[in-house]
Image (cartoon, rainbow, N blue to C red; front, side):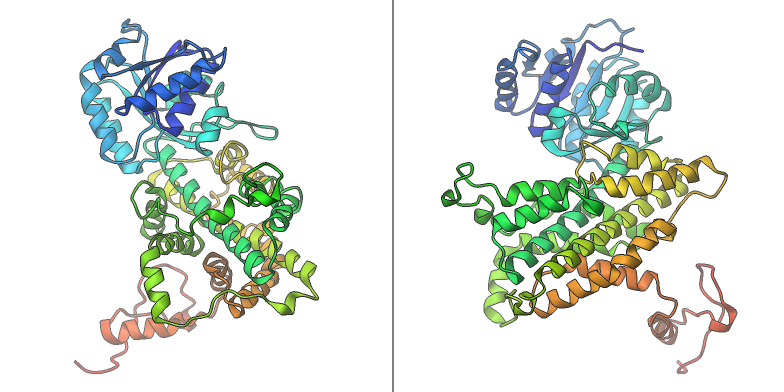
Length: 507
């Protein structure tokens, strides 16, 4: 095992800055660089505030002095961490430090990066004998400080023998899953898994915000009431220790001045727009949808959630269109006065299986790509490292899926490609589907915004149907495009064009 005594971090934003403090806290000297020197100084100032990080973070103003801050013994590999925006910034940094790199150096790209760009950089660095590892860092800036869920992918020997022993000391820990880091697989698989993690996350975020909207508008609950419900949900049954549900409780009950309700809720002042997709600072949601379409995985929950965010970002157009049309707005559902508790339980079940829909779509996407690219990703390990330190953490779902994946991986059976076909998962969907339907029907009747909940309902409907109206679509495709079709009597199961064409109208 290589024992690192110094680590270099490029990028001193919220993620890179907090990782710097985490590494310093674990005894490493940290060399820190950012084009924004004020960000570097802010991290150094924070390091000075604690005894276990004081004098362990040093800032540098240029790449030359930054790279020379390491022991220049070429037998000792240097470890660099990128914490920068996706796209060209990583290429710019590599071009700037290329002349200072030594054979055997290791670069951990901890940003949310497009996996094909990661693979391109791996090939470029391989020519120099430098190991480029794409590593997902899940959990946001707070986990970056305390220990995140890590999904590195790349050179197997370097990961297993050099990086994993080190990363296990700084990653998140879970009671049931241990160290929340694993060797995801070769090439860009680490960034791919993180990309899909974020796609699942987007689905979950929309589902939970839609539930909040129902509580707020249709039931007329106060923020504190909603917060208490979320907190209760996060302590039991299918939503036990669900990270986003848990912090939802905290958000709803947070006043500007502690427990003083007269100071107002922070949430009430937040504008209703999510811009990080529309301003291109975040790419993982777009890439997840792009990949789902590319490998033919139906992912409507994730898609609806993403497009909801896109629409929310364009507030000016929403305001203008609202002036042009008189469409319904969310309103109190008086019908719920006599059955509030029953409806709350329905909504809990609806939220749970909609979150399961997002998981199913994301996990099936990872499995399909892993199979196509021969990455051999162990999905039991993916679920295991998502048990702590990350945004999609949800104990019940992990307890359900991890053993099923693990049992499959230990057998000689074909890898699981669709978790909806697992009996325990199917049983939960069948159990809570009626609740989801009741919630969606009532929400639509009273004007609530429920794109991801509705998409999840429709998803379960059409993937469980053996008599879809798409036979009419197939006929129209054949009519104008001679696309051909299968006959029902032939019971064709293969995914390819059928042999039959009907001449609906002569050219």
